[in-house]
Length: 439
Image 1 (cartoon, rainbow, N blue to C red):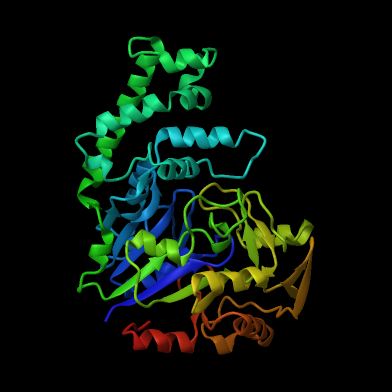
Image 2 (image 1 turned 120 degrees about the vertical axis):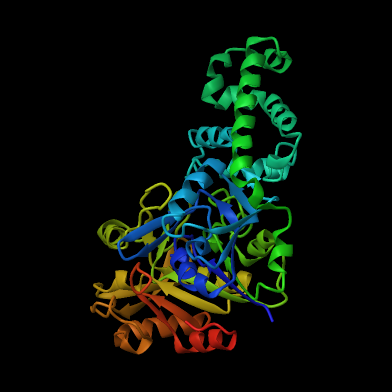
């Protein structure tokens, strides 16, 4: 019988899903990264080794686990090439498959993304091109997929797209800035013998060449339907790895301050190209909350305390290095995440970051612009050496058990960034054991 376990971000991303997935991965046959792109990063630490994965699922660090880049992903192929080289320092022979349905992030997407952030409505993107790549996917006409990389018509398709995007390229890509004084009609009517036409052709040739290089590197890894692979009898235990967090989903979050690909269980299943008949879902939450970029953050902590949490928690993005805004745990958002994802378990990470606080708060209700809080007594004790739930300070256990009562059963507590700094609850270990997984 197959067993599916999903790991999903419960708040605004950066919840340390990568660590949770990495710890679980060696016990699974397959790890699927369903959605997202190089705008997200999972940092994994083991001893003096550290790696930030942006596109590869955490399973690639383990020799026997197959890692799949799913159909809802936006893949920057040059970033993937570099990341794979880094991953090989941990695992010299990673097992990887890439969905042919995944979209490719092209050079023009990055240019459009950067230009958009210079406008009056800055939304705090990573400028990695994910949003514009998603735009072209849903507008359909200009999408480039991983399967296209294998097509004999690749050259023709890229030249057509570049030609049709000429107005936006002239307006937003630095390589075409010298043509911005031209009239719109002149840009549209420019033929292949004009100066603009020649520059467009050269640019399209360069983009095609870069994709053909990727074909040589990754062509043998591309599979049109990864769902068929996952369905194979030999793969008994499948781990789904979410990207970002529930409140950044483009359907469930606050537009425009979201990401551009799905972040919930539904999106992970789409990326897997398979909907399990049954599954368990672990929602990962920090013991407090963070958000990177612009957008509403009801429980944000202003001033010195927020800065201290940022510093102690190392709250700087794995992708851009940007500082994350820090706030108290938002219960209402977490309950929303339970509902829309069908969470069955939760993991609480970075509990140790709260070790020195006199009191800890949880936002339980919003009243207009204000938030009502429940206050807990701090434990004022180092938790990083704790390896089972009973060894945690009394006040820490009270905090965690209260959250569990409001949400779903507690599976994992992380008390530091390293693999060993992790507590598995007895109930979760028993559940995994019944599924044939021994931690």
